[in-house]
Structures are given as C-alpha cells and as structure tokens.
Length: 444
Image 1 (spheres, rainbow, N blue to C red):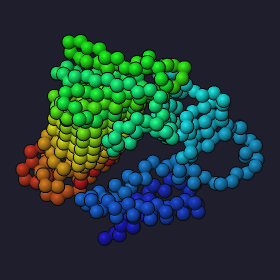
Image 2: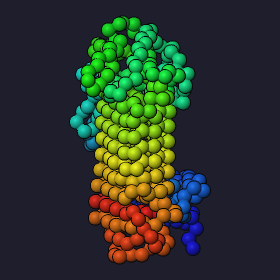
Image 3: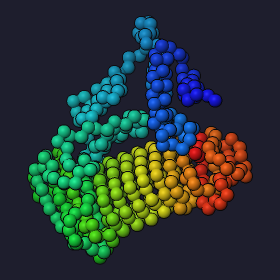
Image 4: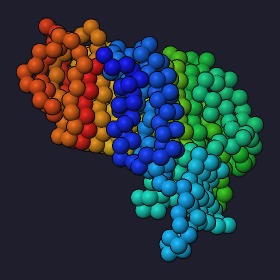
C-alpha cells in the first residue's frame, strides 16, 4: 500500500509536470509536502475516509498555477533580450496590494496617481471585467483584496459583541422604536453596517443609528402602508463619506416577525433570532448570521460573501452572484443555493434541495437527507460527504472529468468513468443527483 507521503508526492508530480524544474520549484515542492502531510493529519481526524482527507488537504492549495509559472521562469535574462522588449509599466502584486503603473490598490483604498477613484452613484469602480472595486475590497483578475477596516472600527464589526455600545467614532446618535406588527418590517439603507440582535423588549423593535457626522438629514424615517412598515435611511451625501452603523433589536417573543433587509453597500450581521421570514438583499457587502430559526429565508447578494452558522429553516433560497457561500450546522428541509462565481461550502447539513455553481467549487458534508439532493456545476468540482448511516439512490454524470464513489455496499445499475447510477445500501429513500459539465464528482 502506498504511503500518504508517496500519494502526496505523486499528486504533486502531476501538478508540477507542466513546468520546467529548477531549485526554486524543488524547494517549494518539499514545503508543500510537509504542509499537505500536516493538513492530511488534521482532516483525517474528522473525515470519513483516507481519500476524503487527502482531497480536503489538497483543496487547501487553491490555484497555484500562476505561482508555479513564476517560480519556473529563469531568474535572470540576457540584457539584449531586456532591451528588445517593449517597456512595460511597473507591476507589483503581493499580499500588500496591487501596483500597476500609477494605479495603486491596497488595504486603505484605490488611487490613480494623485486622484482617488470614486463612483459616488454606484459606490464602486469597474474597468471592464478585469477590475472591480467597491467599499469592501478589489478584484483584479481572479485575485481579491479586502480593504482594511478603519482603526476605530465600530462594535458591529465584532460578530460576537452583545453590548452594542456606541462606536467611538460616532458624532450623532438617533433612536427609533417600532411596535411589533403582523406587517412586513422592511429596513432600506443605501450604505451602512447593520446588526440585528434580540433586545429585552416585549413588543417594541428598537433602532439605534450612529453617524460619523452630526446632521439630522442623515437620520432614518418611518413610513407605513397596508402591508409594510418601512425604515428608510436618511440622506446620503455624495461629496464626502458619512459612516453609519445601525443596531436593530428584535423582541425574543416576536417569532412571527417578517423581516426584509435591503442594503446597497455595507455589512449585515444577524444573531440569535427567531422569525417567520428573514430576507436579505445586498448589492455589495457581506452577510454574517449566527443562531437563526426562521420558516423562510431569501438571501441575495450581488457581490460579497455569506457566512452562516447554526441555521434552521423550512425553506431557504440563497444566491451569491460574485462571492462565497459558507454555511455550518444547518437544518433546512429544502434549500436552493446558487453561486455564479465563487465557492459553496456547507458542513453538517440536514435536509435536501438544489445546489448549483457556475464557476467554482461545490463542497457539501451532509449529516442526514430529509429530501432529494440535486447538485450541479458548470465548471468546477463537486465533492459530497453523504450520510454515513443512510442509504440513498444516486445518479452521477460529468461531461469532462471522472466520477468517484468512495462507499461500501454499492449496487450499480450503470458504471462508467463519467457516469454512474445505482444505490447504496438496501433501503434507499432519497436520491443524490450530481451533474458536472466540466469537473469531477466525488462522493464519500
């Protein structure tokens, strides 16, 4: 039997085979062997099989092709070749930021020469498909750089914070209260950091707004019609930045609450909530949620990430156009999760539904199926850890790649490299259907 180290070296040999060997590549390869061995040992403590732990370890590498290409190129070139090449602008890409000519992107923001690049109307910068910048970070090609938070960051940035103290940068504080109602409760902001939590009230929703400038024009207003109670953010100046943080307290007993949040740019946090509905729509930003019990959820992000922990829902629809979806410890009877460009990672999942990714990786660890499971990838790998003690039917197909089923007690109806169907166990109730246009499918 091949040792773990030999298996790691064999896989790395395939990855490195495309590049001209040299001392730098050899040294880097040895570092990777040590790191991957350590990662394998960590994953083997929780993963079900040797293959799953090895795959998880290699997944930590990400895309290293550009790095290997750089390492494989000669460190010096003949001066004649240098002189014959056309002069290129200075380019430096590192963890500290991106510098291309007089364009500078780092944790503090984006500048072009002496000018700060701004798009006040859309709160972003976009140069074709190559450069996208918003208030949270910048994407250059396939690299993403998150901007550094201000040193005087507000309490909302601490997800575990339960004190909800006034931020030290606040120059104005505005308070509102809204009686609980059977109507939809809508929060509509253009740019703010919003934090939902449970307050100590019986029938009052509390709203605390904090602003970095003191002007009543920035304060929210409340409107009401037959169906909704809407909290609208006040005026938002275009010529200068006004920082806004909003703490919204929901009564613990308000379990029939129907909440909708619209935030054009900014972060949204929610914790310890029990509601009937919790819908989110964010244009650019992030959504973090912990300890939520809701009947229905509809979370839509155009650009940003979703991170959720300890979630319970009857139905959930989750969509990230550009970004990652990470969910841990979720019980959702029927989930529809979709990401266009990014990754989907879900651990300790109970339920069923549809999971689709256009370009990226799809990784699920399922503890129990309560419904059929349908997985689809246009370009990327599908990896699923199926329940250990639950039988299931399966139909797995890929147009470009291979299908691997790492289980015992398998009964095949058909078995080819790119297609396998059948069932596991003796009494399957639900079906796992996985389809990949380009990429492999692995079931553990």
